Structure formats: structure tokens, C-alpha cells
Image (cartoon, rainbow, N blue to C red; front, side, top):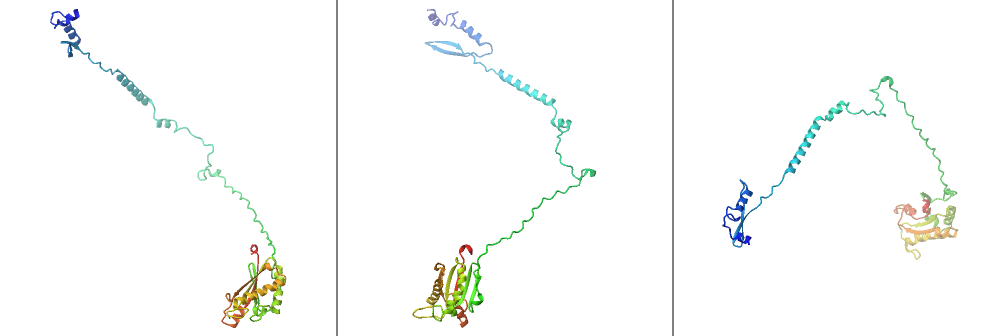
Length: 290
């Protein structure tokens, strides 16, 4: 009831809500001199009340002052320490430029700086003993059989030529000694010449015997020999047949006819054509012995 009456009696003198009453006095005391009074009106029904807002709290900055004092003290201490310390260069000069290092393995003094009375003349080092050169040993090669050993070359007769090459020995025999004109059968004189070569052929049983028949460029045309090819091959075959009959292993024999394709002299003269009409027997060593 009293609260209700106080709300309806704002103008009663002496009332707390009356102008100039206790409420106004409290507001004046809270505000204080020189400070603005903040008042806010609120509506409660149809009546108004006035209140004062509290002033916002101010931030304290005391920690910042403490921090600045500590930093200042550290700087002062550093300056004092630097002032009392000696420079590094002066310290080394006072100590004689650092500790002296004694080299126990000092190099020998040079001749120009050492005392001449103590210089020892150089002693020549002994030369290393050189090994004696090895005496050349005589390499005795294994004696190979000589195909011409025991062959009476002086008895071969005119028109037989011996050609020795590395790994081969050739016997060049004129066709006039072995054959009749236009024939491929050995004459008795030709057989005798072949028999003289048998010791050479039998002395090297691992050599191959190659028989080559050659003619001149004069053409031939007979029923048995239509051309020089058949004549050259027939004469080489006749020699091979004779050697086989004399006991030569046929696996060592080989016959080839070249006709007039490999001349050794021009066919312009009778002497050149006679030289081209020939039979060559070649002894070929095995491939490992060439």
C-alpha cells in the first residue's frame, strides 16, 4: 500500500520521489562536483523514474611500467659490464699474441739459414738394384716337314716351275710335257713326271692337292672337247685319276678347270700361248698351319 501511494504522490513535499527530496539529494552526491550527471528516464506505466549510470572502469597500465623498468635495468647492466671488460686485441697483446705452439717435428733448417759449420753434406742414396735382363732364350720351333726335302729338283726337267708361298707349294708344269696336243690323257713322260712328285705328296699326308688346268685363247671344238673349258677340266681330271691310281687318298684331291681365264703371259705370241697351256699342282697346308 505504501509503495502504491509513493508512486501516486510525486508532488508531496518530503517524499522520496518529490522534487528536491531525498532521491534528488542522493543523485547530487553520487555525481560529485565537476562530473556530468547521466540520467535516463524509464517509463513504468504512465509515470517516469530517473536513474544514474555507473561510470565505466578505467584500464590499469601498471604492468607496462614494471616491464619498462626491467628492460631499463638490463640495458644499464650490459653497459656497465662492457665498460669493465677489456678489448680482445689488448688481451692477446698482453699475453704475447696467444700461447706459443711448440712443433716437436720441426722441418730441418735450410742450408742458407743454417750455420755453415753444422751443415752436413748430402749423402747420395743408394740406387735400387736393377734386375739383370733375362737372357734371351732360344725358342726352338717345332720342325715342320719340308715338302721339298728329298725331291731331286734338277731331275724335274725343263718346263717345270716350283713356287713356294706361305702355307702352299705349287708345281707349274707345261702341258706339252704332260699331254699331247688336243688330248687330256697323260703321256708316258707326263706319268713319269707325276711319279717323281709322289714322294712330296706322300710326305705331307695332311695337305690338300689342288690340280688346276689352264689353256690358251685358241678355241677348240671337237666331239670330246667342245671348248677350252672341257679341255682344261679334262686335263686336271686326268692328273687326279693318275694320282689316285698311285695311292693318293682321293679325299685330298681336287680338280678345277679355268680354261683361258687366268693367263700368266700374253696370248699374242707362240711363247706366251705355250706358257699359258699348263697344269698347276698346289699343296695346301691345313688352316691351322698356314
